[in-house]
Picture 1 (tube, rainbow, N blue to C red):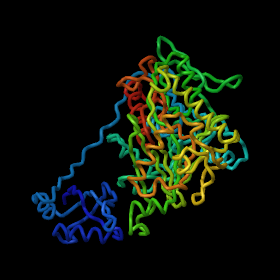
Picture 2: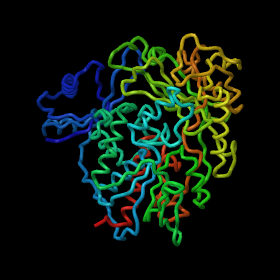
Picture 3: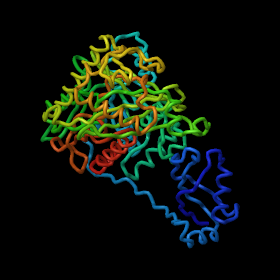
Picture 4: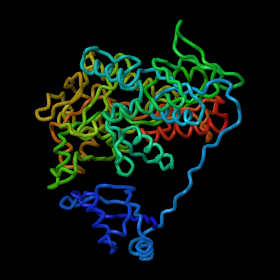
Length: 538
């Protein structure tokens, strides 16, 4: 038997695995029993013709020798033989650990750094300022329900087991190319994620399933010898000869110091107090461009009809997605983190903040679609100091808090009123999903002028690209401000801080990732860098 790789195989929406295999054999001109096994490598939806929507599949086919040789020799199939490459074993250093390897943060970067270290005998200490996932969900719900008028400062949508991505759509798309991606996806599947994430072009888990995956990953870290401490905030560190020597966990009388051989810093982009502490300690960092704007909600049925046309009601299609881009002068305007059938969520992590984001469950069966509509912003807009972006966001989020009424309610507007520059009245057809609620306002009162202009330009352009996007009653909620970190903690090619030996800044909070998968891979790479220096514990 031989395995060949074939691209652009057509799979009808109603096809079963068996009918798809049979249709592939018929197209290839081989007997059905010549196909021993098929593994889908990639599957994407081709909806360019609204009356003829199908899946485009790239697959590995294990065939009889005769069938494989015939297909490989026929140039029209452009088939390639599949060669299995041996997995490279980890490289271990020889330096004894003169303290613990500490991982700060239990988002995707921290989870995968910790898992790799634990499995290879390093027994890391993992500290997370928030709480375990079950407790964290309850803390978040108390804020969303209005039972408390501000988020718990250490257990909220930004902080806690799983990181900010836990309250999201659970998208696993990434622009990076890295062989570790397959390993990350395999671990997630083993922890309860659906197997389809390994091959779908736009995979997602959904916040409901992601919570299970996160908890199971943490359990595996502990089973392999890692120690996980919750409600444990990194508040300081000490150096010796320019190298991290110890970290302080907590504050006041309960603070403890732990000897530290290496610190993998996976703090997430919401940890502004930690970023300021690092700056005060002399850790080199620089301001970074990011994007800000609003979250737009439309009826999911409108998006389905616009994307799928007469096939919109097909049960195999599910909730339609979109990704739109435009220009406002020299600035880019684009949709971000689109959540089909989802909800807009309160994502503040401190007092006197209103921050919005999007979230959806695996089924994506909510009545509304939502996505951020954001405008590019650069250090020229907010200042060249490494912490200028943080101060800028503090002011922006407080402005949204005040416009919302000062009680956690978010300011909102219909698209029509926003485009006309009017104070909005409530939408007549789109019910906002943000909790604890919205206050209809004039969003220009809390947004910078260039953002107001950029979002207006974007909405008009998006209405031309996707029918109905600029509908009068679509709802905009402010402020979408945490698309990425506004700073980058500088590191070298070895993943180590350029200013402090033994410090490894990783993930979104350090400015090196843009989603769950890229953050997980970044953490994995940092763990490999640490392992190349230090020997496992005896």
